[in-house]
Image (cartoon, rainbow, N blue to C red; front, side):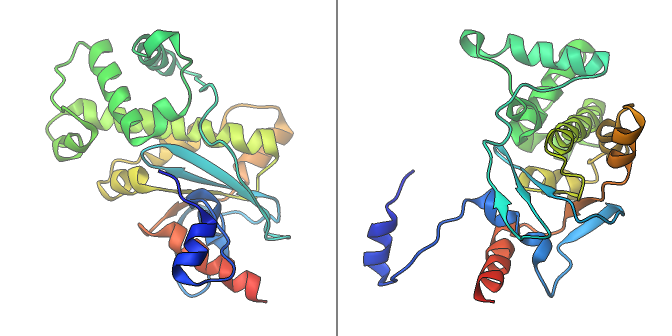
Length: 241
């Protein structure tokens, strides 16, 4: 859908409107005062840029500087995914085979809500297991009866770690990784997010200085469904100063 800022100004009688997309708004949540919006899964202390990642129907991320309070938007998960294990390579190959017209597989195909279901389908095929769930929403209620669900969620968590690994290494954003979004929220609340797999894939075995930077990067998971709204309030507070 689309809209015109000028039309909204006229309709509601507001002289100035500043439009922020959901990921840029969410990037301001580390500055929100008054509530603990994130659960820390690994502590660290750095004034470097941070990566804020939203996992939902799509995948997006933005970068934010704790020093300048400036944010930088991106095209999110529209880049080629990484893999380091045989299972990850096999999953990506299975997903690529299902893409129409030879379209390039991107990270969004793997770590979005639908991506979790693609991983589930790929694992079931690789393990010659019965596909019991019919959609991603059908997976969580089967977490205790369908063993492929937990394995798919663990692989999903690992791919999220690889995604964050690439973002931090390429942009020197070792100030923190903040995970949020509707898909992550549902997986986290169901106890299916595999923190160990996420951290293992985020760290990787690199040259010493890179490995040290990765291991010292603080990691957080959102504790609210409304992170962009909290981010907008934080942005408004910063702008009013």
